[in-house]
Amino acid sequence: MSPRSPSSSAVSSTSSASVAPWWQRGVVYQIYPRSFLDTNGDGVGDLRGIIAQIPYLAWLGVDVVWISPFYPSPMVDFGYDVKDYTDVDPLFGDLATFDALVATARAHGIRVLVDFVPNHTSNEHPWFIESRASRSSAKRDLYVWADARPDGSAPNNWISVFGGSAWQWDEATGQYYLHTFLSEQPDLNWRNPAVAEAMHENMRFWLDRGVGGFRIDAPLPMMKDPEMRDNPASDGQKVFHRPVGDYDKLVPLYNQGHPDIHGIFRGFRRVLDDYGHEDQRVAIGEIHEFHWPTWVKYYGVELDELHMPFNFGLLAIPWNAQTVARLVSEVEASLPQGAWPNYVLGNHDEPRVASRVDSEARARLAMMMLLTLRGTPTIYYGDELGMQNTDIPKERLRDPWELRLPGIGVGRDPGRTPMPWDASPNAGFCPAGVEPWLPMGNDRAQRNVDVQKDDPRSLLTLTRALLVLRRETAALSGGIYRALREGEDDCFAFLREAGDERCLIALNFADTPRTLSLSGITAGEILASTHPDAPRGQRALDMIHLRGDEGLVVRLA
Image 1: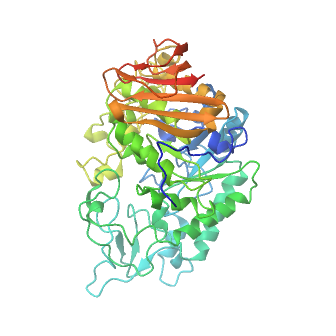
Image 2 (image 1 turned 45 degrees about the horizontal axis):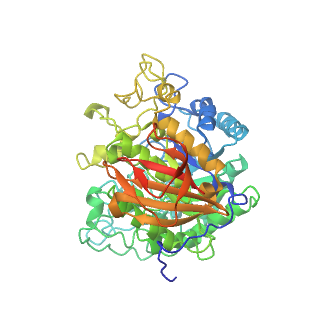
Image 3 (image 1 turned 135 degrees about the vertical axis):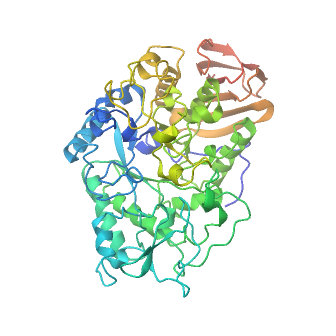
């Protein structure tokens, strides 16, 4: 793949916006079900809560809802420890409620993605219970078991993401089992074809119920080094984009991402493609990879693996125009012909974007950028309100990562707090007098849907306007990307083009005014600004004046 100069060349979309598949045209909205809306008064959100707010999501203008796990689970890791892949935990509802959710969403033009967790199960899953019953169990080889070293220690030096050894000794059978995450989450053995067969059937169960596809959780550890060699010591580089404690001590060379992972992804894709191409089903993978030539490999050489590996690049860099623009150009230049990009600013594992960028004005700028870059954006629930991290008292901490590794900043509770719907005592999330599973944000009286819905200056109003604009403007929903200003004077400016339609997006990352002069751009119609009092309509654009932290979307003449 030859390098291209992103500032002087355009990157083509796979097709025009009118014929692009739905997952390229659409905007994904992630719901953490525990925190969206509680309808039965137990302090935990549920599927009926999502159904109740489908009209809100349709009003907002999102096209796809990704729902974090709702499977039966001991909830040690809040649903990512799956006990049964083909049912709904009673905490959230039942299968009939899920079917009603899919039908209600479809009636509002919204598709549903479910979170698929293929690397591991709960230690209470019937497969694992039978697997650990004896070494001769028929299901023994569904999981990764290994003998101790001669001195009785773990088979190798692999470290769990949650700290400590990734191996758990099983006294009854005299072997260790592998757990990339918690010891309550034993890793499946994807080198056993029976695992793939069973997990493909689990996928078909949900596809048959009408889901649009899957967000695939933590897929890279599914395929490890078959020789289980020790990982080398780290040279100080972080494994993820922020410190994660013990896991940073080693380079995860052998415990994840073995080249055989591509065969697993192609298997997933075959399952999805069996459901046809007119209403294509999609796979989006949680790929924490920031070396773009490696990242793009997960699309597949023939674009036959993941439809989109999640791009977490914007989570990993400082908030300034030059760094952000460079990342976008690197991503665009890395994509093979026909691959479709995507961008993420938040999810259930990350601090809230409004807290990361540290101001309401910058959160507005971030939302404009997310919804105007080429590719499929994902909005984390509440980011359309500018929800911020919530301080969690020590006695209310729930996240097992934080409880096991306190004080190093891995805690995810602050970004998982309940959605504020109104100014009532529990912000409409659950009835008054009920304690929500995590504390509500202190600013819920001002930062909630009811308050922001009718406020023309609110972030919610801006987000909705941008989503409407994106849907109605072919250049924004499916056009090519062309960089114009890549960080000079703290500004990031780019064009989106489809046919004769051209849109300029100009973003000022500085908190003081900037003036841009862009060659060849003389006039246009201002369609949107992050500043609610900005004038709209036709203007001469020989000079573009941006206030501090202002972004503009302009349809060029």
